[in-house]
Length: 606
Image 1 (cartoon, rainbow, N blue to C red):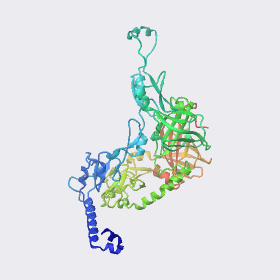
Image 2: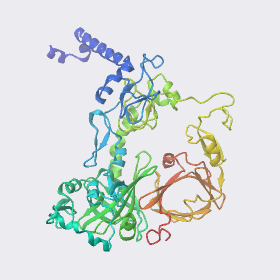
Image 3: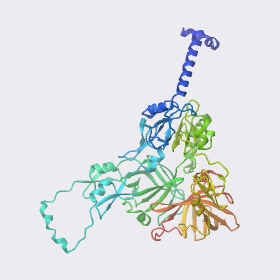
Image 4: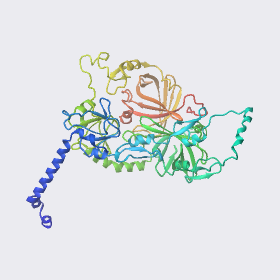
């Protein structure tokens, strides 16, 4: 029979009665399966204990933590949307997944407590997005309180591991003539020999016995590993910030097996690989090892690696101030999101990668057809009949394509998703209607509305993107004819970081009322500064205005200034994300010396 069937023409094959019946049966089974999945009771999602079982069922998705119901109680991590949203089954309650909701793939990352690497959370689906894990996955470090003889946790880049701290942590003692009365010290018999100590050899990344000092072998082995920490892997742009700094933009690339740092003249400053030893970060090169201390700071668009290194073959700096005066200190920025931020470092490699992924992303985008994506806000999204839910950040389809905030759960008509933020089926409070709800005062209705300050007209505007109550906004939404005190009389050095950035170092100097900015090409922008709410306005000599959004965050060695500029005579940037991509808008990352730092430690005025 098989031979005869293979010999038939296509027309003969499709009209064979037995085959027609088989096709009919297969179609019937397929339709039954689809209808069965579609008609699934959303409450059935609650019974699936693992991510794999959960996402195998239509209308169900897996939350990285327990979902939260409107009454504040917790539910299982597998939750779903009713087949008929207008008539949910008895007992079904709207829910919110606080973080990392998915019906596409069971993944997530956890930081290991021994090697401090981000690894897959496995089939349970727990964990956090990879970048979130990377940003927080490094060993805890401790310093000794000599008053209490207790070890306390400190910022990464300072202190040492808990075992070393506890072994060396003693109360401070005083010396004097009364010290001679301590005769009990001789009652202990012969002194006991100290156990052998070990230290990590920088050249071979192995533990070697030392004649004095060191730590137990087990402790040394735990910290002396031939592995590049995942949190430093990436492409970087940066600045040298020590007292001997070389002006201009530096670049670096760190992989699992290699590291290269390029100076502003395009020459290789160092090449080798990166290793972590306890709280130190080492750059191992053929010329020798530079031991360093480090810290990580997350800004709106970039993660900043502060890295203070000692000389080749020398010890790590004892502090970041020590690194500024006696070492080689850098601040390197790595993009948080490929969507908003793309470094053009090592151009040939990046172009090859772009060419390889462009076709994949294009095909994935063309295949996306989510009927929920047309709903622009949370209220219409939740109320929609297409089994939709609202994500606090744009969802990701097929692990490659970024979508909208509103996304569907019915996998028979919607691609599978991953929401790395908060995902909810709880309806949002609709805006208040009525005659008084649209008044500018907002005093009689709309008490839950949030406002933002329009710096051009100095009025508070109600908006879904607002962050302030009306009274707070009104108090802040006034023109102040001076530079914010935290910026006054300070010098900053920086880089443009938006999607169309110009390479090279920028400089800015604030007085009490003015700012002078020198671009990477040498152009000078000078103007009077006023502040309104969260915005800083630069008025140029020709009366043109530039509205900017700014914030200062302290770092281990220097302060970080995130500064987003609107178009000339245009509106201020709606957000830091927006300024990275919006035509006419630009964004910068600057660093400045800590206020009060002596010039012998940090000086950017020259």
